[in-house]
Length: 124
Image (cartoon, rainbow, N blue to C red; front, top):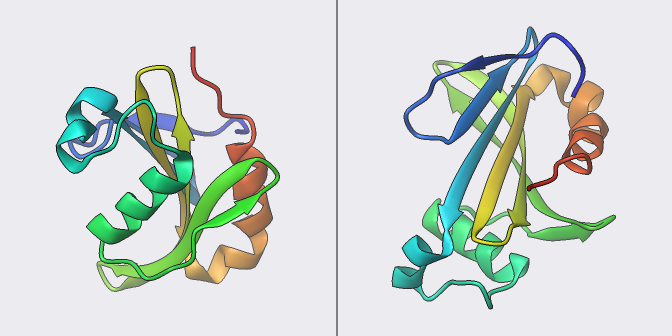
């Protein structure tokens, strides 16, 4: 991600970054926690992605492109419409859900950029 992001605290996610026009959130879900819904270290990104969609009552299509597993959606927050690209990742001990977001009016500006940023994510 480019310069200009700053970290903020948000109780519902593991990490939250914000810039003038975009936000990025990350949620870490450890395998041990996900065992309650029959997900774990042997589950696939598609398994996890489908569970995220079902848990959030989303009917969007889970896509696979350029090594990424993701879906896009729009929603209204405080009277504003936002565009999201939600990307799922698998690390050694957990799944991660990253949401890249902007106002819906900036969708064309950021849709491809979010996927470029998503390809730079790594876990250690």
